[in-house]
Image 1: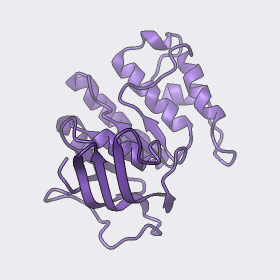
Image 2: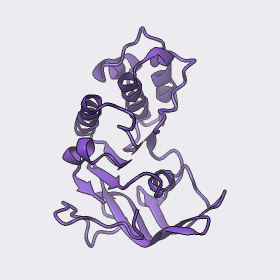
Image 3: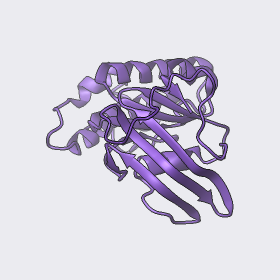
Length: 225
């Protein structure tokens, strides 16, 4: 990643001039600097992420994309373990903290000891009280995840769909995706991209995706950094 979050020519961004209080902004960073050890990955950067849209943060491996995702989603709330960052980081108009968003991790982070239904029920059980009730079977059927196959025996594409189903079941307004097509063949990656697009359209979910996969994910993006 370059020293600033930048958008390529032709980007569809409509965020210029908007503030964190704008109802059309889900998350943003401002005057944001990120360092790993002695290396500066981002310097005085600024970016905003539109509500209900799919935004890609694109760059090659090893440049700090996953770190940025953890900070934006609130998983990494303070500088530690050689990672230092400062500046404004907001989600839903307030400081980004864990629990405001759902995350689909690169390695899926599924509970292999649970069935696919059990994985989604775990998320349903941790929804906020004012969230709309949703059934695990309903979500699994919607995303075409087998319910009679052990989680550990699912294919890569099936595990990815299960991870998306579990994230959706938390009922959060935004989902962060860490390299959602990594390790998948081209055909499966394109199916996952289409699934992300359909899921966001159907549920009004904001998606922020870090990736190096231009081929599969750029076609579904509303904005690209």
